[in-house]
Image (tube, rainbow, N blue to C red; front, top):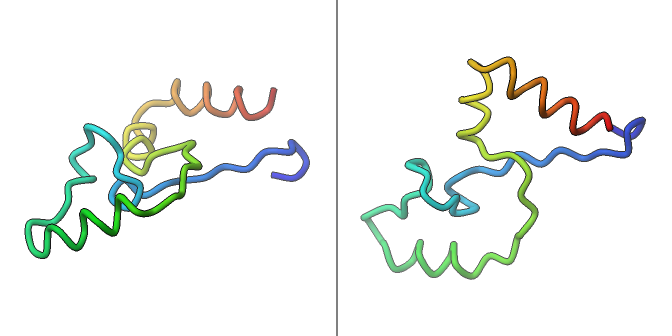
Length: 72
């Protein structure tokens, strides 16, 4: 959103290991591979989690608050 000098990042809960989220569990198959791979990723930009979008879809107040924050 260049007009507002704002970038919105939506991070996948699995790839960014969203803490305490049911969508971020490490697979049981090849567990050590995935654990090492996910822990070695250095991406730290976090704004919105995928599971939060699901929650916001049913909650207009959260969407309005997000938009208000972006447009400030």
